[in-house]
Length: 402
Image (cartoon, rainbow, N blue to C red; front, top):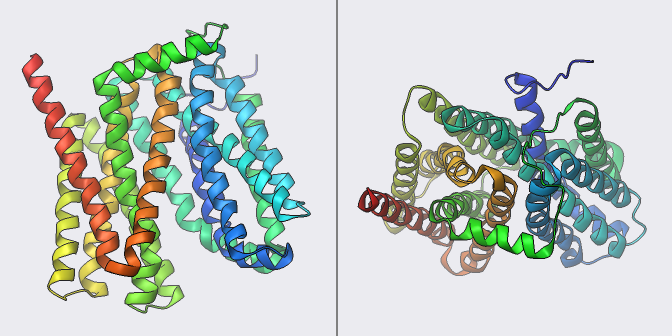
């Protein structure tokens, strides 16, 4: 029998899972530079072109809710193949879309398919590992997954200049096909508890069981709040740096890369500290406290009129660092308690994360015209303080039970 290249303890396996998790952010960020050209080519308004992102995100929110429990019933590999095939087909349809309506349909299909990547990556890690080794694998995936989105906008600009906006979607489809091929030929089924039976009633019971578990729901919400403060920055950063601070586009790209590197650094340190025996709750508490302090610091800078590139950058890097530090521990807390329902828990984790990201970015868009920098930093701080309050409540409840 031919030996699989995707051995659970190998770097190749971590890169593969990271690639699955990176598909959604790459598909969003790489398409951003093409929105104007899409509108011009397909005779669409800027709002219609913008809906290509909104519908992708809508599909990404809905998809994991189905993939998760279905993978608990039928296995991880079939659901991953289904999602990746749908993502690839959506990319090809987008590349050849004759109208904006077809492109919007293709982007929804892409998003729905991309949801399988993140959900199944988390479930596979839970199938194969537990405890501190699981946390370290999730940290490794987070590192790999967050390198690509930092580079994606620049790649999108380069592709737009050479092979048109349709080529960007063709490249997305090619990435999906590569992941599909690797899954089909190299990935072994990791779920040992596949039931091979499924019903809507069972789905409802599975989700009810997950939602009734306080630790799982708390960690899902903690992860969502972390993504919320990070995505508030992502949404507000072009407004802050390009409009308020008037930096050049090249400088903004470097700033975005630096803050993205903060996520990678946070996830890397999470894995290192976990290996040295630092507990997951302590890492979470450290992350949310630092994020809250960074948020308060940003608000203070605004109130004192000390806002400049040199003053805000360290605090923004701290904030994105804290998301990278928190995410692996939050995911571990959500996936560990019910291994037989890791797919359902991973699906909820993925969908709630994107919902919080969409909500926080929408709030920034609404508040920024009225509040300026405070519209971004206020949302970031609110998410971090809410996460800190929730973590304190969880810790208190856990001690009371003991």
